[in-house]
Image (cartoon, rainbow, N blue to C red; front, top):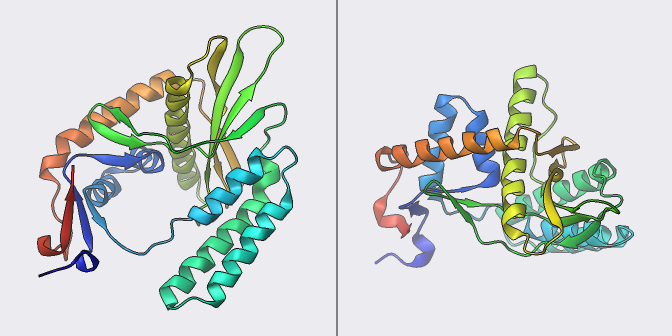
Length: 260
């Protein structure tokens, strides 16, 4: 009988996707889209790098009034210490990725301007359901910009610390920009849902995707309402395709868990 440690697949009976994956899906051509959807339905359970330690340090750093560099240095010291005591090559490689992500963010952080905003750490957010697709949007920080006249502005920043270098071709740059814009639109939609107080409105300019390695801060575009409709259409397409998504090579149902 197989135990929980022997499971290598997680099968999602219903469509689930992150805001980053949704951006990549919409920006991709047909074949890569099929691969993304297959990976959504049939997830590999692996001890992969989740960047949890780095994400937490980044959130504390950005939410601090003075962006205290000792927060990032303490995180680096912790990661280095854990790498020295790693018990496997995989664990060591994952920690190398986290250290590289932290270094990239530290170099890129001056490109993320939150001047004039009240910055607070974001807590875990429940997913949104868009046209039958569960979409996870997890911002790093909330932003609020107080104005003397008119409504105050609310927004959020979601930091992407994962590896990924500079893009050389114009097509690749355009696709990356579109993917980031779609993700920023999802952040804007989340901010609209999260606002409960009067006198505040969600601001597309303050709903930002920040890519550490590319040193780019991408806000939701002025056309965010039209792009949100495109997202809804894409989610409907994912739902239609879901029952017919083929199993990936090497899939073993005996080594899979199932999730609604």
